[in-house]
Amino acid sequence: MVAVGNRTGTTFDHDVIIVGGGPAGCSAGVFTARADLDTAIYDRGRSSLKRCAYLENYLGFPAGIDVETLYDRFQHHAETAGCTVVSQLVESLDRTDDGEGFVVETQDGETATTRRVIAATRYDGEYMPGLDDDAAMFETHEHHGESAERFAPDYPDADGRTPVDGLYVAAPNGDRNDQVVVAAGQGAHVARSLIEDDRRDAGYPAGVVGEHYDWVRPEREFSGEWAGRERWREWFENELPADHGLGEDELAGMRESYVDRAFETRVSPAVAEARWADGVARLVETIGAERVLDALDDEAIRSYVDGR
Image (cartoon, rainbow, N blue to C red):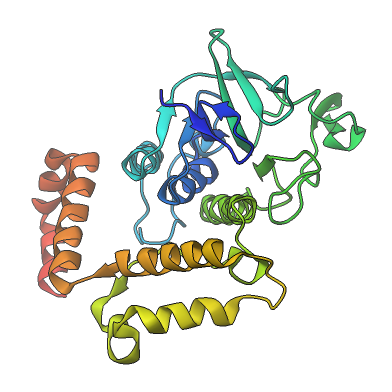
């Protein structure tokens, strides 16, 4: 495990720990890892997704997809993006002694420290008591005639931020976890909030702190006036507020870093095609080549394909 440092110099095992490896947690992890934040996902709790017999409304699978396959795809994607997936149940979450981060302890007694945490467990919030003395974090819930304490779904705001600095909640969060596709979107949205805060801590001024888009651009986006670095520099400086407060050297460093990242997103048609082929191969690998071949042997499916 590689220790990472935060903006104050304190060293942690990870930049981000996500508790929960379902759609919200893995989606969040893909975004934070691709933003170069060292990310670990802990996943061995109850899963609301696994209560579903077969998923029929997840975008991109018009005939539906079995839950285990989709769940495996989520975690494989997170690992490919750079996340470490830890198959352990989180028992407790506490502040570090210096108050600068968090320490996660698993049911097996292992611990890890992190700068920030994203909670992504719809059912389980029992690991969070003690982080906030405000009673608003938990509420009494009536279920089948019995009363129980549960994490309050309205404790985080819509962007996943909470009164506890460094703690974000993707689930439970209002009514944004009732459908898998919504939960995945909420996880990504909360991750973007965290990334925005991380960039702000790094010194990025308000005008550009939220300008983090995770996408790759076709080469045609870098033609004409946008073919050279100067136009990208101009855009960056035009977005800065007049009172950005950056020194000349600091501003130049951030500007060039932004331009570097912009040009790193440039993808040629040949590269895009190679990535598409790799994506298909990985999908077949996850589903299983035998299952794919069995499906192709089905006469009805062959007739459908022939008729397209």
